[in-house]
Structure formats: structure tokens, C-alpha cells
Image (cartoon, rainbow, N blue to C red; front, side):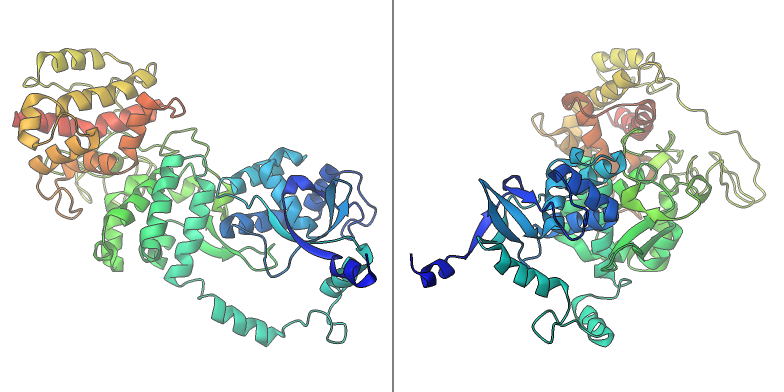
Length: 503
């Protein structure tokens, strides 16, 4: 072959899989060399684990490595030796197999990042059979301007101009929306139901996330958007005093609320404050949080305490004990809770506020649908209810969670109830519940005017609650517990009572 022809084929472009490449054992970042990919990966993690995780996060969020700077490789037997782009391929290898990391904290970090999205299967790479030729480009890439031949850096003023063009201020609603959605997806990677809601809102109503999570709401929840001090690109993240477990119930409600409602339902601070008061029991007290804010995705959801993490107690809407007429006050665990009562007020059910006579706290239910009677329901439902009322929630929470769903379905599927609601036997449970709720309260979809006694059943049906109830029966990965049994027993009790009265 002629010299000109060999020069023509010295460079080519290939799509390489991470499994096809070997990291450079003589990488200048690791001056004393490495003996294997695993050693190279762990040395790069030792050099900057947070930076490597941030690179991996950018890769899965964009679906590609930086296309403006291609990796460079040289043929090495049947594989390819990476001369430029070792960190990118190390990140891809860790995303595919986090166990390559020796440190458990690093493995956990890359498992979380991998759950956000799919990394590219291949990377468009410049491949050469001439290492000296490759070194020319690598030196220019990493050693500055080189009299105009290399990379000419922007000045501080030029950098600031480009950042203003490329990014809105971090306090802007769209930027805030993106940061919150990103970190919710990462923190709740273990909860498919939550991911589904977050991704749905992100696709359809991205900017509304930032409108709801306005500065006043962020302050009330002790949340903030902060720049990561370890990030060279000043990446921003959601920071919190509470973990993803602590805030699971709140974020599940909030994302469903944004999904279901127009901006008019949270258009100003006064309206948002009223909305937060209505679900106060979902907001953990500041006293139970960490001493300082930490990146929310670094406190990921473990699922140890069910949908709410620190689950709300029994009662009406989101744990607030109510009467059918909507009376009552916020239950334990929230803003106005026994551990954080309103000034001068009574935190218990029936409290009259300042000057009112305090009543004792309602005791937690010991049995499923404790004390509930449905005399107008079919005999089978009544007999089943009697058996349910013998289920000790502490000892038989799994059975109780399953039976809560069964009893609700039998109630709303009886011939008499179907006649009232206009639902059909073959329709999904969620449709049957919503139709009978609409019959009982024609304005049930309006959060301001709906019957507060039925609100919790509606919100559970319209949000994650029913997904969990269905999961207890159909999905072995959904874990029931006593808090959930109490939550659903309390949520659907008013509905069952009202249905019995209607038939």
C-alpha cells in the first residue's frame, strides 16, 4: 500500500462498547501506572469520586458522552486502548457494573445514578493505529493555548456571558423545576410508582414544578437549591434537612397535585400556604431533620417505612383526624403535631385552638377498620368486615393491607353501589371509587370545596395510594407494613360509611 494510502487510513471513527475498551494503564492522571481496569477505576474514584459520579449523571441525563470532544483510542489486540476519555469510559463501566468500585459508598452512588436513565451502549470514538499521532491531539487538548494551536480558554467575563446565555438564573422556575425533577428521580429510583408520576409531570408540566415549589414553599419545607461546591461546573442540586424516606409521602402528594391541578390552584403565596396547611401532617418537623442541609439524592429512599417513609398516623386527609363534616386538626408527625403543636392550640382531634379545652389524643387503631359497621351492605361484606376487625395491625399488617383493598373493592362493586355510581362491574377499581365519590360529592375534584371527610379516599385513589393497594395483591416487591395498614384503614373508612348510608 502506498504511503499516502496508509496515512489516509491512520484515523477512523468507530462506535465502541465499554466492554471493548481498556483504560490506559499509563494515564497521566495516575502517574505511577495501573495493572488492570478495576485498579484504574478505583484510582480515578480516589482522585475524585464526586466528580466521576457527576460525569456519570450527566451522561445518563443527556444520553451521551460529550460529542464535542471525542475519545481517542488505539488498537490493542482484539480490543481498544483508551488514550483520551478514560474518565468517560470509567464512568460507563461503573454505570454498567457498580461493583467494580471497591468502596461500598461509591457502589451505592453509581447504582443511584444508573437508575436515573440509560447510559449509551456505544461511544463514537476516534481510533488510530499510530499512537504518536494521537499524542499530538491529546497534548493540545490538555496543555493550554500552545500559541493558538491548542484550546483557547474563555476569560472570566466571556464565561459569565455564555452561562447567562445558556442557563437561566437558578431561582427561575424552569431551572428550579429541572433540578427538583432530576433529584427526585435520583432519590426515588427504588420506587417505580413515584418515578412514573415525576416523569409524567416532567413531560407534561415541567415549569409547573417550579411554580408550585416557589421560594415560599421551599422555605416552609426547609429545602433549597444550592451549587455543589465540589463540582467544577457548579452543578446545582436539591438540598434538604430531611431524607427521601421522611419526605416520600409529601413528594408523592405534591407531584400528583401538580399533575392534577392547574396553576390557579397554587398561583400565589396565600393559596400555597393554605394548601400546605391542608396536608401539614405530611411535612416532618424540622426538629426531626439533620443538623444541616444535605443533597437530597444523597439521602435516597429505602422503602423501609412504606410510601411515606416516616408514615403519617391514622386519620383523615393525609393523617389528619376528621369528622364527616370536615372538622378536626392535623395529626401527629407534621407541622401541627403532638411533637410540634400550634402555639396555644390543641394538637389533638377536636382541638379548639387558643383557649379551647384540650382533648386527649386519638389512639392508634389496633385493628383494621376498628369499630366500623356497614349494616346496609351485602351479608358477605358484613361478615368479611367482622373478620377484618379482628386483624391486629401490629401482628398481621400484610394481611390487613390486602384485606383493606379487598373490602373496598367489594363495597364499591356491589350491585346497589354500581347502580348509584353508574360504574360498570368490569371497570377498574380506581374508576369505581371515583364514580361513587363523585356521586357522594359532586365537587370532589375541587381541593377547596370538596368534602374533607372524603378527601383522603379521593387523593389515595387519584395518586400513589391505590397503586400501593393494588401492589399488595399483584406485586411481590411492594412491602406492606403497619403504618400503611393504618393509613388505608383511616383513608377509606369515611367512604365506606358514606356508601353504607347511601344504599
